[in-house]
Amino acid sequence: MKNTGSRGPAGVRMSSAKRSFGFTLIELLVVIAIIAILAAILFPVFAQAREKARQISCLSNLKQSATASMMYVQDYDETFPTAFGTSVDGHWGWDFIHIAPPGWSSSFGANTNHRALSTYQYVTQPYTKNSEIYGCPSSTEIDVTAADPATVVQKPYPVTYTYNGLLHTYPMAGVQQPADVILLWEGDGKVKLKGASVAQPSLSCPEEPDANGNPTPCVYQPSNASCSQDKNGQFSTLFFSDGSYWVHNGGMNFAFADGHAKYRKLGAVTTGKSDVNDVQGGEGPTDCHVDPAAGYTTTGLSAWYWNVAGPNGEEWICHPYQFRPDYQPTDKCW
Image (cartoon, rainbow, N blue to C red; front, side, top):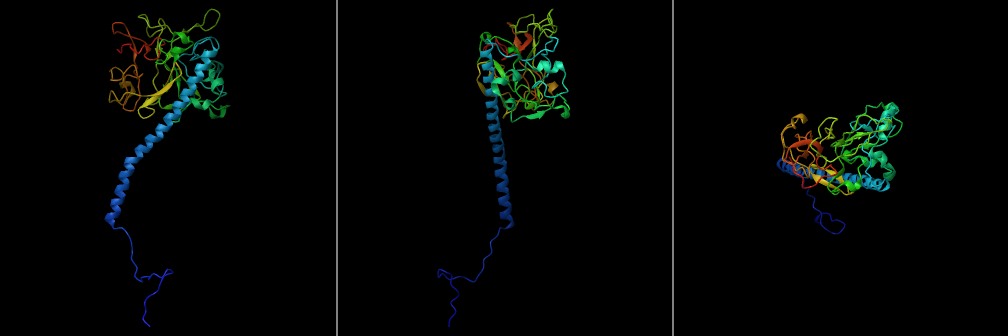
């Protein structure tokens, strides 16, 4: 009988021959090259998408903090929160780092804890009821208090957002352009301080208390030619940032004195320098009505900010632009 071969279950003839499949070396190298090219194209896109998500989360945190500040203003005779506190004996701590919250480490003394009672994070906490919103998810935590871990008695706040010290106890009605005056921002750069906060900028206040031992009243005064960087005239200071101002894809989030919040793209590199001390002294192409900093290092650090100009363009070095309660978007950049 003639052998016709075996048949499969469906009656289809099955071939006894076998065929091998595989890639040649050249084909394999081509595939690897294509994958590498696609990865090079897509990975930055994925990174930007992740950072965009963190930026949105950060903006939400900032908006909640701004809303809490607005609620505080309504409850306290339309006066903005304090930006910094005093020591027990009535000395303003305008140029101090304030711990957040008070007493989170048993190693802190009475003056340190007393000053912390007046930070914006602490006085607005009854409205937010959430300490986690003070930190940005894009930021890296740093410890500036050097508190012994064994002395921690409660969780310290992670603080990224800085409060505008020029609004310290300032009446809301006195802010001329609330939609343009910065209330809160990522003023310490791409970091979150472990259990600490700073006012950025910080308004200089009288060093000595009054005759009764109470803090001398300290409220922003409109700029004038008598202001100078000494205790004879009122000024304010924007301290060096601990991290890059390019927090989110080359910019950062801001909240304003009317309660709204938004993202702003900030200026590009202006000096080509890597040392923050080299940034000072050369005017850069940033817009003083958008960008608080006038110059950056190659990594986004800044030590030079826009100041108030006199009527004839002279530099008074009193208060940073965009933070003054009497700020006008038409003010001249010097």
